[in-house]
Image 1: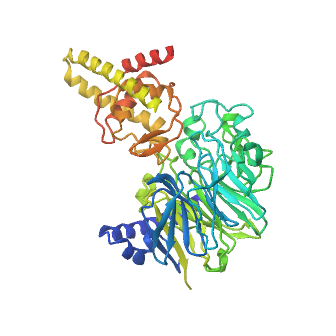
Image 2: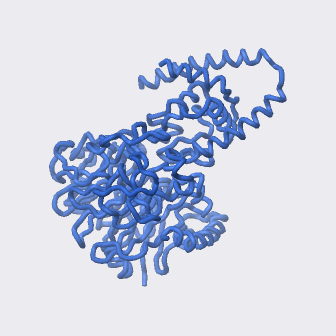
Image 3: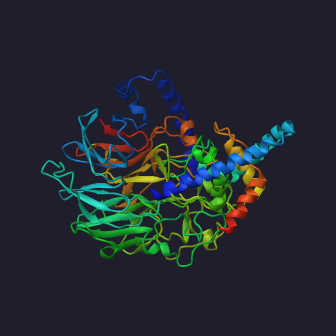
Length: 427
Length: 152
């Protein structure tokens, strides 16, 4: 189905592009010349230009862009003791303006005159001036603290809506809520206790300080881990991209071979309403059978249906591609078909070995009236460097965060080499 | 910090124990040829175990996964004390580990379901692949560590 089509159509394309790229890289010209020649190594639809604005800024996770052309980048591993880098985009390159914040992490978002940023336990905010510059970088306010970080799915993606709410992903500190995490043959914990404090999206007040779990609302549950989330203003609701479970073969080799385990389960896009349950850990979504399947840890066999109380995904993508960024495009720069559709940054797989890895690209999912409409396509490819680097998983760059500039340009961060890309369109 | 100190003390003790074991090993110099072929066979068998059990996290090239699964290439965990390494396979490993400035945080489950011989072979394979070169691990060593681990 989708996946096979994707492989037959995209793989030869990627292979050809990879060869061209490989040749281009042989002489290794300076970054700027490469930019002009080959879209900074990216393969894009006709009319689009890719530019690497800057590289080497650290593990660039999520990003936020101001109307003044500044880019706030959340860094996952402190660089010179700082966890937020401020860049200024001057068109075809960016320069580091400053860096601040003594916490590492993933989430960053601008709303209502504040820059919000997360560590793996807390959410902070910094007041912005009229030009969206941070006024006091040394003294952030603590909005939420004490969120669970047990070294698995610890990154806290954040998002704010127009109604004064802050949404925080609290990922499950587990793969599939087994009695022994990731242990071969270990069954699921009865009434998975992880769901009480993680594996969901929590809603807090955007303007209240020092909140804890008790101040928040578990807005959605049964979501194993979410990095990409965005608000869809067409039908006024939250959309999230879930990272599906790993290791079906490792844990239940008698039910799943390595090929099945590489493709399953789907990475799912969910349209979330308050109180929704997406079904983890009791079910996973099988994009080949098009159904919710009972998790093997809870008595499933890869065929039995499950998740009767769980919502259906709005769209499903091949397994393990790791969707780390989601952005509804509301700009006017790109052609009309992109308006209100979703860009998804797939960080790229690791859990497909020994099968070839996949991903390391930005996908476009068309939308109509706030619902996915039609087949998704790979929009920006080539981050990995070559087809061989995609397959081995040794990607040069891995797309992570997405942001839209005031002029409708699309920004993509890479947390491997610390590159910030800008994608623009000209008729 | 305290954990680090304790860990390095344990490590030093184990290194001492390891050195003692090596001295003992030197005492019987016979059958060098069979040791070499034994090593090759152990590596070959170990590769099969690796491709079945370890590859999805540690990858075909042993390089691990960014932020998640540690690499097995020339790290002290892999090349260092065997007892410590065997214990990781038997008990799993559930702490963030820092290697060359990168942190790896995924959970490694216990692999005590593997037979002593399989653990010996897979560790011998890992210690002699991906650019690594370190003495083989024997099934007897795994048996000994398994007994010690069970007691604690």
